Length: 163
Image 1 (cartoon, rainbow, N blue to C red):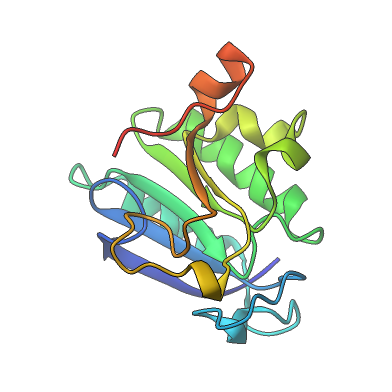
Image 2 (cartoon, helix red, strand yellow):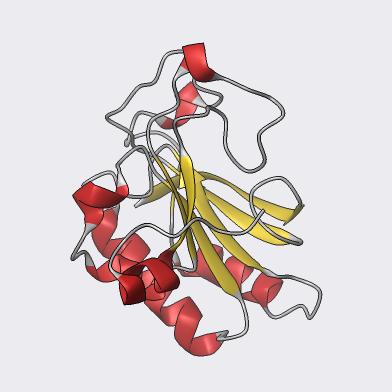
């Protein structure tokens, strides 16, 4: 897996102060995407042990609420195995930290995927420029949903994360 950046102390991509891992690779290529440089899965840096340690060092800080996976698309086919393994490891090592993930895929397309076990919040759906609204919290366009993953899995239908 490749990535473009690890943002520290981020307040825009989920609840509280977060670490954000911006992965490379996206097949959605949404019009007016905020981060088109991340579309090419061959761009960026290799996510190696040093990068993982950087993420873990940030997550060990008591004021950090959790990690957000963004990009690109963390669920781009090449990213799924490593993002899933990393999310699992984070959930085991840092159980008090929340895990958010942004993807262009819909919840309905992701049902049954292992990664859902480790996520707290999923922001689903492609960014739609015509539905852009800067007043929205944690999402860029009104078609996207901010989903409480664990409650949704338990109840069998989409439950939105409280805003």
